[in-house]
Structures are given as structure tokens and as C-alpha cells.
Length: 311
Image 1 (tube, rainbow, N blue to C red):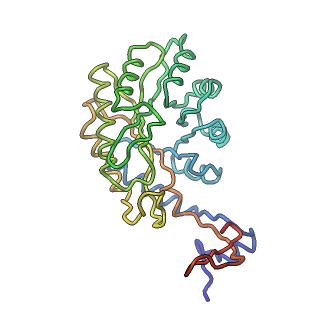
Image 2: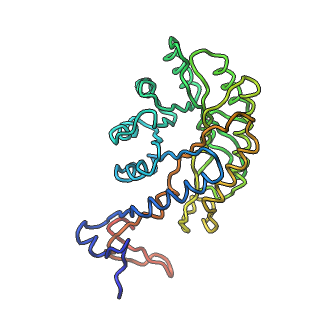
Image 3: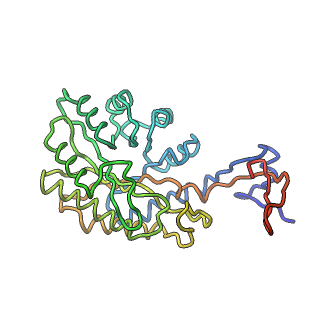
């Protein structure tokens, strides 16, 4: 029988050298997937920037590859922030996300010039205290949660749009003196295959941008469309729907970008569009090699296979 290969390398040779279980990532696939996704979106929007989601895979080699391709770092913890800095990523090229930003991390991010995206009111209160004596307002973004399509919204993150909470936060920042609203961020779910979800999300995010512009004269510097693109992994279900019709990067790009450009306020130029891409960039590049140790019958027609990576 012919032994399977990964990127031209014999699987048995890999296991003989490194043992099992063994995770194998193919660098050429990582780079090709990144470029394919970026090109698709950049063809639909005038200014695009990717940020690699460290929580997806924070192995230094993986992060380094995506940074070499041009990605910023999107981090959600001290650990990830430290890793980005250790890889030589400047503060200005870090997006600091998530609900668990304590005062030391926020102060460090401010000093480094990182892009801070506020997640909740307590964080907003803390940032206003930290920046109370600044001569120049600190530019910040705010995370927005919303109900769109089949996604009922991750309302445990960010400020809610439908309740008016997001609008109140926009007004609070606009009328304050220590902060400046630079960006709006949405991350509406994961493994999303319904493009209407993104179209509606883009429309709602652009609507809030238009409100901020018309009511308070705010010209946003960026919009962050988050991530959530489904992978080509056909067995992925996440308890909802089997991935049998994953949209292409071009289809995602058309749904998001066309919706934003149609509904954004008319300014000199549209804001920078950020994406925090994760699993869709790495899943097809990864393999797990494992040895079969034994098997045993379970129910009629089914057996449990015991491997050195699990059952």
C-alpha cells in the first residue's frame, strides 16, 4: 500500500522522527490561504487590513508566518499580548480585545499605542479614569453585539445595538474629553455560513457609523468586521449545522464589503476595514497523526477506536 504523504513528506518518516501523536502544519498552505482571503476582500473594499487571531493558534511559528504575510496581532490576554511583543510586533500593530483587560494591561497598551477595543461599561469607566488628565484624547474602538440572521448575537461581549446601549456609549464618548471614538467592532459568531447574516451585520454596523457621523460629526478611522468565516472542514458542526456549503472568501467579501459601502456615511474615504481571521486560515493546513492502539465493540455496527491521542 502507498503510504500517505503531507506536503510531499512520508507520514511514517514524520512519526519515526517526531513520535505520535503529532500535529503537522503546512506552511505553504497557510500562506496561500492567507493570500487568497486577503485578495478576495481587498478586491471589494479600498482599504483592508488583516489581524491574526492569537486565540485561534498562538504557536510562535504560526503567528510569525501570518505576520510575515502582513497581519497585525489580535490578542485577548496578557499572555497573548506578551507573545505578540516577543515576536517584535509594535504596539501600534496590536488589537487588544476581550472582556478581561485589567488596569496594568490597559496602561501598557496605551503606552505602546495599541488599538484598544472596549468591551463593557466597567472597562469604559476604567479607561476614562486612566485618561482623565490626558491633553490629547485616546482613540478607542467599541465592540458591538447585535442580532442578525440566524445568529442571535453574542450579547455577553460588547455593547448591545438593539437596546440602544451602543448608541449611548457613542454619545458618552463623543461628549467626553478623554476618549475619541476611532472604530466600531463586530464579531457576530463563528463558522457562519449564512451570508445574509454578514450582510445584515454590515448594514447595522454601517448604520451606527452613520449615526455617529450625522449626530456627533465622528469620522471613524476603522471598522472591524471580526472573523467567524467557516472552514472547509466538512465534519464541523458546532452543534448547529454540518458544513456542506461553506462560502468562498469572495462570497464573504461581497456580502460584508458591499453592505458596508452601501450604507456607510459619505466621507472623504471609507474607514479602514479590519478582519480578525482565525480558523478559516489554518484548518486546511493542519493534520494530526496518531497511532491506533486497539479497538472494542460498542453498539451494533460501531466500535471504539483507541489511539494515542484519545478514543
